[in-house]
View 1 (spheres, one colour):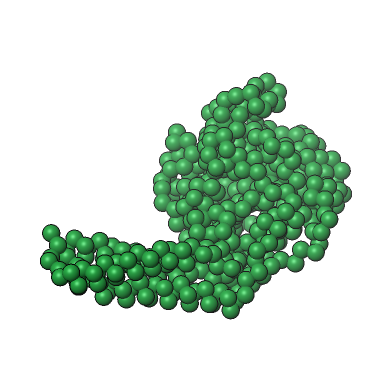
View 2 (view 1 turned 60 degrees about the vertical axis):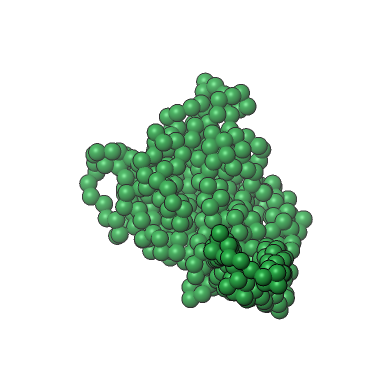
Length: 470
């Protein structure tokens, strides 16, 4: 029940309410206007967390990857903090204290649903869900047919939670991924909804940085206009409040609380890292992104774009996909003329082929090193963009010639702003429960990124976060 007011008081209150309604709309419009440098980015704290998925295909050379290699899971104690570098991991030596090597993680969800080894490995990798039934894709051997992945991928799940206020909720970069098939897609907006990566640095540059031309003075003026409108709205609220009854006062206080929340977001609004700038892209002009000889340069350009997208807070979730499952790029710049996929099917006794597989994976580790160095070179606050980033290096297989999805080479680089303790080797093969489902890893990743939940992917193969990872 509202209190009695004189006609004059009612007119004054109505006028204030009309002004309030107008200004509330104006404030909403002003707040929605994107910052010229950072889209509509908002800080999640001092600095936002970022996630990067870094994919390379066809398994690894196991003997040259694991700090402690032995197919026997009962091979004795292993040091968690004092582990040896291997030939494949050696390019990351300068960042050893920033890494977590995860041994014994397996795609248990691939026991479900259709698909050949590579199809399952790729479709389950980020979704943890069976492939859809269907005849879209014919598998190898006698595996029959399959459709797309049956669920959302972890990058998109996280982007839905933390990417709503950035210009791009997520960005997907590709390096000669070729074709629209279950072998060439790892990111999914939902079941049967693959997201294609952009293989061309030129088109990616134009889409991401084409409007990155803000004048810092104009940004400052925009912020001042926003704050002035909010100040005026709050003053009007405070003037109107004493003249209202109890019910109306409650409603008005709710509106005032919402305005104050906007004000607080503006005060903590994310600013681009100090190194945010439009990338120099002269090297990409006229480049054929699908030419095999351009593979290394295209990858470097895509990583440059990815790094600067994070630095400028244009996105907080990104992925880079080097070729695809069954990717058969001949790495001629390494003196290797055979395709990667073909080599991965050679037997273990073929020493020449196995040495080439080792060299291919060393090269991919060098590319990860480049991305880490790039992120570490961009200042942010008292540290760097890398300090607030988590990179997950992943593969659809553990070993190419057997198509095993056990002992998949997962490497985490970065701590997601201190959420993870790095510099460790963790082995999840044990007497009680040999191997850990990779769905558990994605629970740990989403928790590290500030996204709550204790399950991801198919519930039959997820029982919470990886024990001891955080």
